[in-house]
Amino acid sequence: MSEQTKKNNEWAEREVGALWKKQSATQKFLSGHIKVDDGMGGEETLQVVIFMNKHKNKDTHPDFRIYKSLPRTQETTSGQKPPASEETAVASGVQEVSEEDVL
Image (cartoon, rainbow, N blue to C red; front, side, top):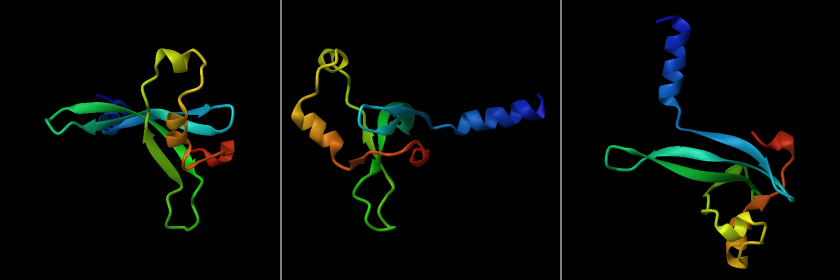
C-alpha cells in the first residue's frame, strides 16, 4: 500500500460527517450530517443545520449553533411555509451571515 493511500485511509476512518454551504432567501448556513455512537456499538447518522449565533455578546458565547434537521414533509418541500412554531424554533439564534463568516 502506498504512503498516500495509507494517509487517505486514516483520514477516512476519522471522518465523522460532512457539511455543505447553503443559502436561503435570508441567510447563509451549513447543512449536512454527523455520525454519532448509538450506544449499542453502532453508529447513527444525524442530519444537522448550523447557523451563526446572533445572540453572541461575549467571547465565551459560541459562534455557531447546531440544530437537528427537521424531517422535510410533502408540504415544506412543495414551497409552502412551515408552521409558525417550527419557523420560530429554527429562527431563534439565527443571524444572516456573509460568505466570509461561513466556514
